[in-house]
Amino acid sequence: MILKLSDAPAVPKAFALSQNYPNPFNPVTHFNVEIPRASAVDVTVYDVLGRKITTLLTGDQEAGYHLMEWDSKDSHGLNVPSGMYMVRMTAGDFNAIRKIML
Image (cartoon, rainbow, N blue to C red):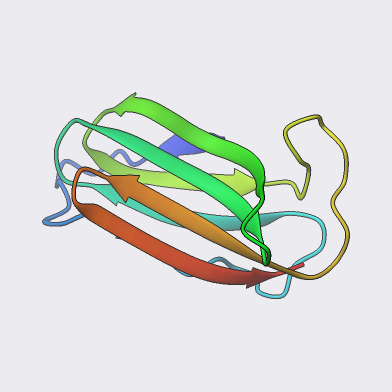
């Protein structure tokens, strides 16, 4: 879920996925996604076995700085157990993965 598009007029120079904060977290965490140009972007949470837990963002997105939130729920709205998860962002040739701890 995107919480806010930055009001800053500057556009990021490159794609980026920040480390989440706080980390570890319970039950909500935030991270920043930087998109330098309008692009198809996918941000998905996986468990340590590589199973998809939920997709937070998918499809065409505007350029800018985006604040994201994950409430530790899966795609069915159920709370996931404590443990390590991976957040993966893809956009064109860009690919980033961050380990997060619930």
